[in-house]
Length: 305
Ligand code: PEP
Ligand code: MN
Image (cartoon, rainbow, N blue to C red):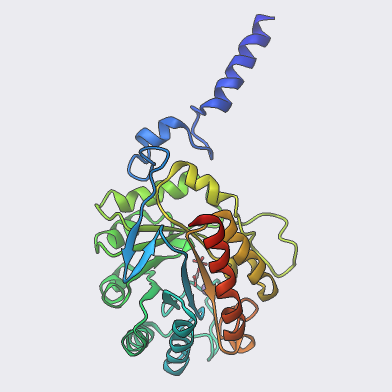
């Protein structure tokens, strides 16, 4: 009998305050594993401004193609998403592509792409978020990007996180698709540890056996939005494009992301989605973005401001 009681007591303590390291977060983690990322009190929320966008105070949108395919494309997208209301132009010149084989359409534009992003930024007065994958390109990217994007695949590359953090540029840390919230926040702590406090988390879909469509590899984990907000003061953004990999689902998942409490939405927007060089099933077009933008803003205003 006493054995049963002690098992019950032990399991109650485990649930109330998980002292065992695992995928869940204990109160001890908040004190000793990620004290900088952890909320100092219940109402603690980071608000900060990047190029005029007030994170934590308004709904922030990031829009643009998957890849900076050409100068013409990125200038056209910059003009259109800026006019619709996007805060940031997104697009990768350095791309983590799953397989090493490239056809003519599928080639990273690298330094040239960064230059085109810079031209789009100057011409249309729109700030830039773009990914860097190698340490040697950090200075180049940091010169043009208003926010440095660290992709899912680099989420736990700790020396790389530290090197990006040292630029003192704002950083978006995308969640690895296999990462727990605990590991994700541990990675964010590496950035804050360098004195860089402008960190934005981005949920972009997790790997699970059931994704409801044979082409989708990921499931948008919107539950992580309120879960993160329970423990961290950092803003969190959702990326329904990468998560769903399927254009017809992007609108509903964007609206759900805002309803779930996301501080921003990252969207792939392309003038001709079917002919996008990378991931042509997921971008929405200008018309779809024009329709979705005010719908997202309305939900944010109704529930979160
Ligand atoms: C991207 O945003 O273009 C990207 C590659 O995202 P992720 O790292 O989430 O796959
Ligand atoms: Mn992409």
